[in-house]
Image 1 (cartoon, rainbow, N blue to C red):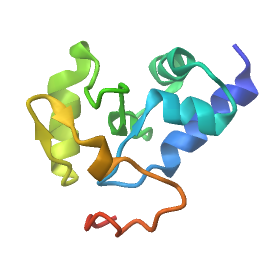
Image 2: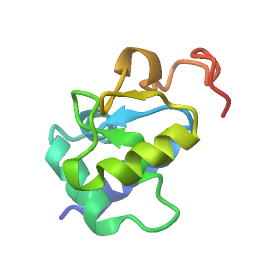
Image 3: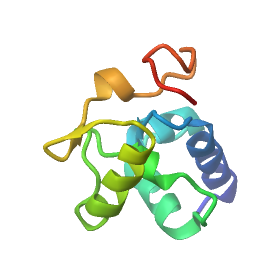
Length: 107
C-alpha cells in the first residue's frame, strides 16, 4: 500500500466536520486516487479511535452493512438525519469549499 496516499486519505477523512459526510469516492479523489475501495481499505486497516470513520459512506449514502447500526448512531448524534438507512448526500455531503454552516449544522 502506498503509505503517502493512505496518509492523505486519512487527512481527508479528518477534514470532514461533524454534521457532514463524504463518500469513499470523495475521499479517494481528494487524496489523488481513483479507488473508493482503497479508501475503504485504508479506513479499515489504518484508522484508530481518533478517526471519524463514521462520516464516510458508500456512494448511495448508506453505511456498510456490518457498520450500519454503530455508524447510524454516531451520525445521528452529530445531527445527521438518517432515513431508511440512508443519508441525503445533497444535504449533508461535505464540500471543502463550502462553509461549515451552509447546511445549518453546527461544527
